[in-house]
Image 1: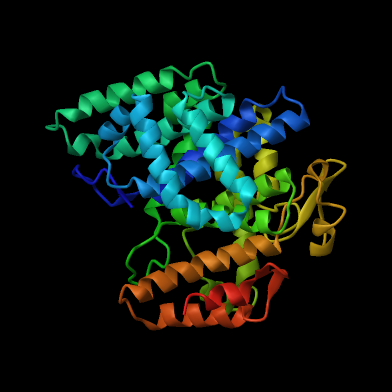
Image 2: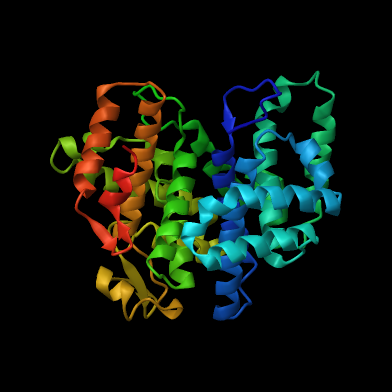
Length: 399
């Protein structure tokens, strides 16, 4: 789904990249604006933000052909917005109902609140994050379209929209951009849309590292629902997926065969990534200023336990590796702050499979894509996470 496709642009801008950037910014704002909430209140807010982001993405996929100015005019008229939303929900219902009644009811409630003018903290955080990510994209194309009479109005709308959220902690720093620590971190994350997956393998459509991270995050959340994960575990899995490839800001996308071709090369890459993360990314946030954000990022990335693909809980303020059985049993509680490892790896592989499968379906045939598809099918043909989550059966549906 392309964005800004009526403007001159230096590269294709697509919806999944923008949604990924939006949810990274939403996470920053969530952490900064939930510091005074109880654990229960924070979990509820976090769930509303993650689900709201997924719901909004699904909504955008359905209304892909409606230009933003037209959509905002429709949105300004409650009766028209309600009719459009009813049609969108009708289109989405058969696709999302397998996720269960709670997810479907949550989606309906989310858009009912949107139609009625939702001003909840979750809604405002998502709106501010949306405006920031869209404005970031707009600045990529602004100087290439100086003759376009819409440019000034678009810039003004973004400015006024973000200024309306200045009461939220972190928004001012985001507006000020790379001159602030928070703004610089958010800007750097946006650069992952420039890095293409499978960079030496022609594919249609191409996908970026940023978009891949969002797909993995959504899959991790959906799998968490199917596995009966507690709310905090679902949220942790979403954000672990959303950030799992952030070291590629520093190393670029290194394909799996390269990592496994020479003994020890994977460990060497991980060691380098760890040093560079600390030097070039975590230092931007500065532990003395945003120590809580750094701690959470380290937990999502599995820094303390050696891999983001280890299942962990928080015990006495430290990450502790646990088994799948423990995650599904006594550790499946919000207060344990559980995060999956094996499930995240499955979602990462499934996203890679979908990338290869889509390219092959679009007529792009080469050895890399065929080998990747075969390797992932073979790896998971007899594997399952739960009775409801048989990975081999899921992949078999793509024949």
